[in-house]
Each structure stands twice: as C-alpha cells, then as structure tokens.
Length: 244
Image 1 (tube, one colour):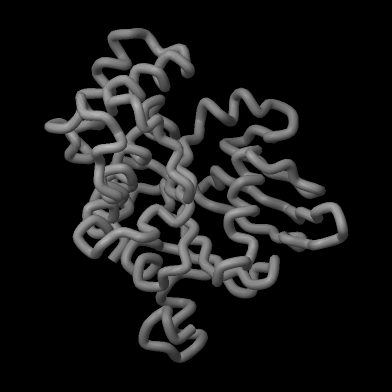
Image 2 (cartoon, rainbow, N blue to C red):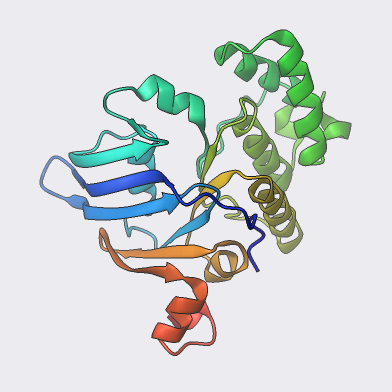
C-alpha cells in the first residue's frame, strides 16, 4: 500500500490544463490533457510505451516545450518563471545521465555548486543522501564501476540534493532486478512519508499499485481514466491494475 503521510494538504501543487504537444509534421504526442496533483501525493502516470507519458512529464519540468496549455507548479506558471520552478522540482529521467569518470561524491559536489548551495549544506546533504540510498561505501568509486541498481539510486539521490518539494521520476526501475526495484520503492516511500510530492511515470502496473495513491492512465496522447487504485479496480471490476 502507498506510504504517503496522512496529513496531506488539500491544495494542488501541480495544475495542468489543456496541455498539448504537436511535433513538426503534425504528430500529436499529447492531446489536451488536464489533471491536478495534490501536495504530498504519490501520483502515478501509467500507459504503454508511446502513450505520451514521458513527453507530458518533460513538459511539466520544461525539458520539452509545450505547444499549448498551462502548467502551474506550486502556484507558479512555468512559462512566466521557470527559474523558480526549477528550484522546487527534482527529476530523474529514464536515461541516466551520470559522469562515468566521476565519483558519486564529485557529482554531488558539482550539482550542489550548480544550485548555488553553500558548502556546508552540500556536505550535509551528501552525507544524508548517501545513507538514504545506501551508497556510503562506494561514494569515492567511479560511476562506471556501479551496477544498474546503484546507478539508479545515485541518479535519484542527485535529484534530491537541493531538497525539492516535487520529485519527477520517469520509469525509475526500468531494467532493474527485483531486489534493486524493492530498494528504490523503499526509498521513494520514505521520501513521500516525509512530505515530498512524487510524480511517477511507469508502465509497470504492480509498481503503480504498490506505490501510488492516485493514478492517471494515458493512451495515444490522452488521459483515458483517473482515480485511486481502489476506484479504478472497482470501476473495471478488476482484482489488480493489470486487469484495468
């Protein structure tokens, strides 16, 4: 069951209205989707490969420019003040972007400087995050020596260095073995329990059912249904999300 805190605020921290993305040539990857995510919620964005999940999430963090629509993050219009939005969000994309010739500690220090964090705070965060993702013993080893699970955990930790209010994750357990998946799940539950809003894209129904309170299912660029896990299973008379 989801491990989110009980004392959720009732305000929307992500507000999306009529979001679209049309590529040159006329391909409509995202077709006018609208939804909200509450502060402190663990929200899942599901759908098959090619459904538009990643494109949608990339538009929410301004990595992909939207064609039309509005995106509000923590009350800020991403078009009007993207810099303030970046301070509030962390994101780990499907393709892990680690420097193979750097150590975990060196990458933390670089990220900290990019966010203009004081040296003392960077050091405090490094100690805390290495412990969180269980990489303390390999903090000074080069990234190219890490296993797939270790790389995912480091990528997750780097996205948390500046203590974002919202964490965006794109297929965070893709390609991991069951043990590594479980470790990532445990880390995400702990973050959410401590009040962080988590926005997860995945095509693994068991992952969504394990972690998410509320889920939007996307197909062919549109949201086809949205609700809690219990609501979706009841609506479709299904025992698991796999059957929805």
